[in-house]
Amino acid sequence: MRIYIFPIIIFSIPLLMYSQTIPEINGITAENKQIKIPQELRGKYSLLCFASSQKAQADLESWLNPIYQKFIAKTGLMDDAYDLNLFFIPIVTISNTAFANSMKKKFMENTQADLLPNILFCRGNEEEILQKLNMLKSDIPYFILLDKNAKIIYRTSGRYTEEKFDAIDELIEM
Image (cartoon, rainbow, N blue to C red; front, side):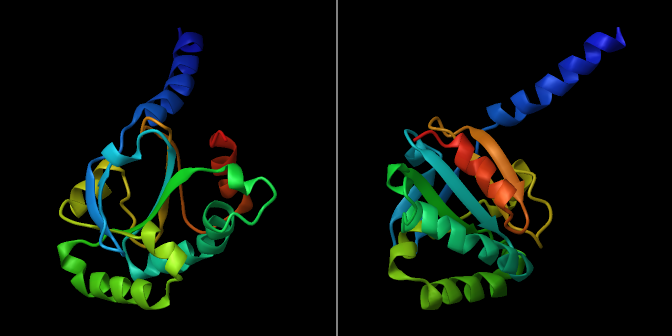
């Protein structure tokens, strides 16, 4: 009996992760464009990058250059083939409004113009987003890759590593 239960458990965990949906996120970009997630993400792969504290910001910044080069500037040989939604989403709860104001001001002052459409500020259900996506540690950033149907197909957290970035890259079909 144990022989049969173990494989079922091993194979069902990835299936649960892949079938998870992203909670509804209403936000506004740094350019004042209204975005509704997941509704407006369907049809393309989407990479969502979340940070919920200043401590997480340092690790998030370790991802900025690789993500920017591959998916925005498209500097690599085949990078022009990538067409995905990409959002950096600071998640700020009511208890952390100082971080919210600081984060928004810093993004607006220090962000290159071509990155501004990719910054999304949430409006409303921040606590729900954190809980539903199991983003319980505020001191690390979270990265979630959605398929073309806005279903979660990969998630990771923490500082940038080539292994994490390669896993994202391999899942995106050009």
